[in-house]
Image (cartoon, rainbow over all chains, first blue to last red):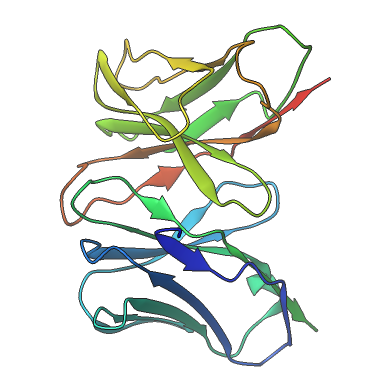
Length: 110
Length: 115
């Protein structure tokens, strides 16, 4: 079993929809959680960083962490075609090595 | 203009050749990392270095080598021993590895293709 599971998609939604991206993990030592956005043929860019359980909001993006269920989510409101990318969850704790999910490829259709 | 640069953007290698991928950062970060990305497999850690002249193997170090002679540079050599080197290679750096505020920042990547 992988330490971090992420549905690779692809996920295709109409412009303006609310998008929900999710990851589950098995290692209870993970304490720090990140979401990266990666456009095609580019390096990942950090989108959100969270530590505690609960919600963190930044513009149209909300990151949610539920440590009791070992489940994290990224919500995108009012999705735009420019949001089309691959979204990678990442987390670490204890071993101090970042562990990535597979990435979910998202397409927002105009 | 601060950031991480990787070169070349595209690299072609013949069977049996060693090739070296460049990674430079001017962010004054202590730690640097090399990842490999294959379709459907996310990012896998090859090597990382938390300080000059020191580096550790990641999860898939076989067939790769690195050096860290300068803080700002962390080149990766893909040797002929790497059986399936065709992939997208990403370099990253971070300021304070192991602390609660540490985050990794990535370069633009190098796409290596074996002919």
